[in-house]
Length: 357
Image (cartoon, rainbow, N blue to C red):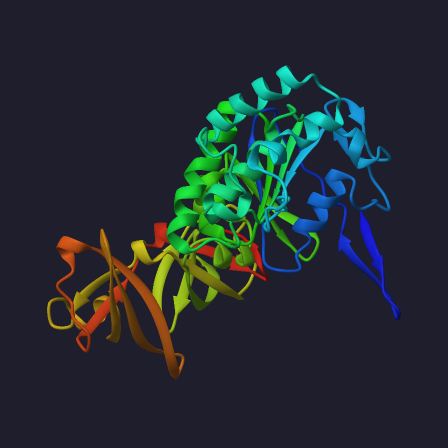
């Protein structure tokens, strides 16, 4: 647990957070701004003191150990390279502090710069490098002394979109080649899904779910996670038990679902459906009662597939639904009248924020 005292109150930044990071794993902490992910990273590094709980590196309790004794490497979003030093001296700095021999320092620096793919920049100044190159130098500096744990705090935040994609691959390659256990903080869900072995979703100082990117995308435990990871459509619904199954009523349309713990009575629920699971046909190509009627507002070409924004009239008001179709199936155009529908097996059902089906 971690609390911060302000002038008027005590703010709980981390509330009974618990997670185990496996050896050699690239583990992401993902969540919106203010959820506690950077605070958790700083507590792990020893830069913030926890108010309660323990932090273990392996079997050893490091809760009260100062940062310089934890053998961690840390990479910040602003790189924090020394502008008055060459790249070689930036990377060698931690080794000089440890009083290694000059020959050993050169060997280690050259080896780690080969690993990050920048063997030819040792004599340059950091300001002569691109943002991506500076980020790799910062990684090299953090890895050169063989840390037990590598911590990265929003390391790609200052890069442009194309370079971010390139550096995601590079960071994962370097981490796997070095084998160092890594905790990576980001608010970018695509970044976390692309780079991590497992990730923890955080909200309000709590860890909501831990799993692989595939597990969390396919089986979110809460409505918050369902809406935070990937694109999701939500529909208001009412649920009630009927004929041994659960009836789901969405704006007058009925679907049947199977739930492990069906509701005792009628309840309100949120139905979540991914855009790729929504079917869409032109109005007139199917019976009028075979889907929710709507009109296509926007069509976006996104490479392999086309994403449509469809306006439905539901519960007496307009609702925008996102629909993805493979490029070869994309016969619908902006302004077309359509019918959209989805299978009951593709629905995720939430009640009071928690997953029930």
